Image (cartoon, rainbow, N blue to C red; front, side):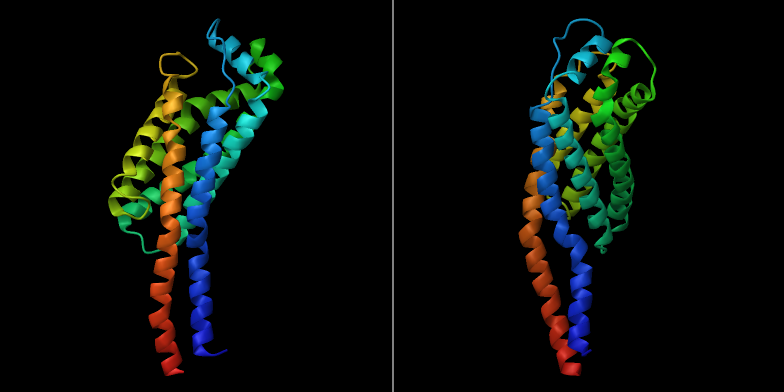
Length: 236
């Protein structure tokens, strides 16, 4: 194998993780927005358990949460791929590492949340089943951490211009904080439920920064490879 061929192979392998970040973020943003838009609601009457039961038996529970699960999986994969790209500063690498762990846990949590409807009757009857316990932990701890993680990633990425910029930063920050607060309190009060529509800004942020990363990827790939290949071919 010639030196130039080896360089091309190494550059191709190094660029693979980064190539999927933009498309995955954009796809995650679209599915997150769509899943939230069709999420079943409740009448607002009765206890929080009865309201939850109304949503669980709604016809849109599975379509909505299948989309949200797809979104969580896309976000997690994109963040993991972004972490592998290298060249991140110490602060950005720390944020990305922490958020990647949260994103993977949140994806598992959303999988359990998707199938919570299977235990709708038990939840309505007040049974403390495994699914009920998982639902409680997921909504009050995991989802809020995920929202905070997205907010932190948007801020760090925007300030360093590695994911978005200072303008897109606001979308992820507001959306992430809104999602975190609404999720953390949903089991106890209706006061912050109105923040869930505002959380859709996460989806808009992801689509915008995902699309921004597509041309950046192409330009950086071309600019980095040309000099290296020229030097390799000369030495060869």
